[in-house]
Length: 138
Image (cartoon, rainbow, N blue to C red; front, side, top):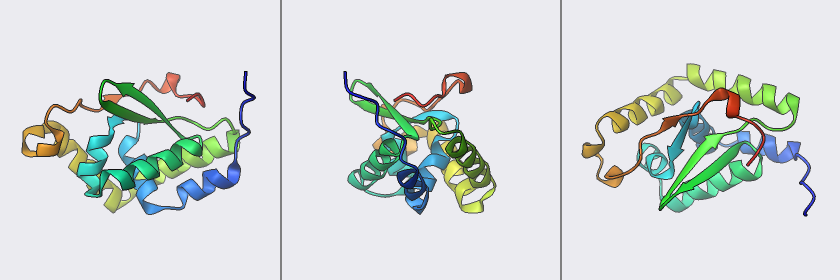
């Protein structure tokens, strides 16, 4: 059995140091979201979004779940208490930011009227994540 990798605080801060990654975290919030929504809302190519999501996963703050052809992403709290507090404060700050609020409004619109978004045809809707299940596990 492989040893669990130690939490990398430098990687954690680097993950929070990019606007696209902050936008992704903002959109995830307290829900699990299919990658197709990120592509549509952020209007960026899927490979770029996937690279940023992989970075967030390697930093220990995002987990994935596959459901058929769909990949779902959600926030998990890091195993380091200080990093958890910083992430929670960052997410709270993002909720107050106007640009981040605009992203969430676009997500809400896409979820309510997916027929208007060709790329979202057949995509699963975001689902709320039970806060008690959010942990450092991947």
